[in-house]
Image (cartoon, rainbow, N blue to C red):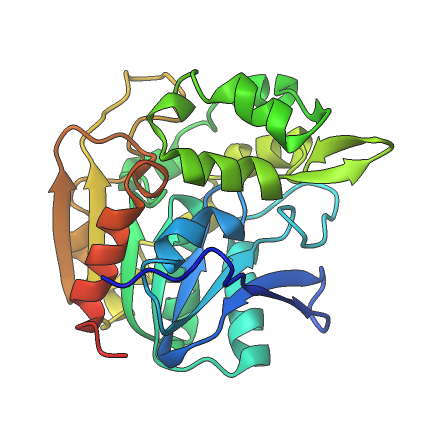
Length: 291
C-alpha cells in the first residue's frame, strides 16, 4: 500500500454557515471520499496516519464542535449535534457516496447522520462506536467528573508528548499518532498551549452519552448501507467508567440490515491510535482499493 509523503499535508477548510463554525481537514485525491469522524476529546488530525496509507484517495477529517479548530459553544453537548456537524460538512462540500469511518463518538455521529441522509454515504466503518447496549439508555449517566481534572495547560506539544508517551494508554499508541495528537490537540494561549477540547466540554459529552436522545436503535433498521462494526474485546468492570474498554454492544451489527461484525482479539478501545495500518487495510477492503 502506497503511503503519502510527510510533506503532503491536508488543507484546512472552515464551514462558516454552520453554528458553530466547523473545521475540516482535506487530503486531495481521486474517487469517492473517505470521511473520518474522531472520538470524544480528540480531533481530525488523529487520522493522519490512516489517511497517509490511502495515498491518492480524497479524504476528509472533521473537527467536531468543541474540538480542534472548530467553534466551542458552552455545554451542554447533546449527541445528535455531532451528527448535525457531519451533515453540515456533507452539505457544504457536496459529499455523496462517501465511505464514513468513525471511531467511538465519531461512529455514533456517522450512524446519526446516515439515518437522516443515507445518500451521503456508500458504506460505514464503525470502530468501537459508542453505541451502548439498549438498556444503558435508561440507566443513570456515568460519572465522568474526573475528566474535569485533566491537565489542560502545557508549555508545548513536545512537553505533552514526553509526559504521555510512556504512560497508559498512550504507551500502546503508534508514536506518530501520539505526536499528531499532541501537535494538533493544543492551541496557543497566553504564551502556553491549551487543550483544544477543554475538559469541561469533554465532561459534558460523556455525561450526555447515554441520554435518551442519544439512543440510535429506533433509527438503525432504516440504514441499508453496508456497515462494518470493528470491535475491541476489552470489556470494562460493571459500573466502572473505563476509557480503554469497549463501549459497543456486542450484538450491534445484527441490528443493521447489512451489518458485519469483526471482533479484534486482544484489542482495547484505541484501535486507530494503536494500529492505523489495520484501519487503512479495512478501508481498502471496504472500498476495493479503487481509486
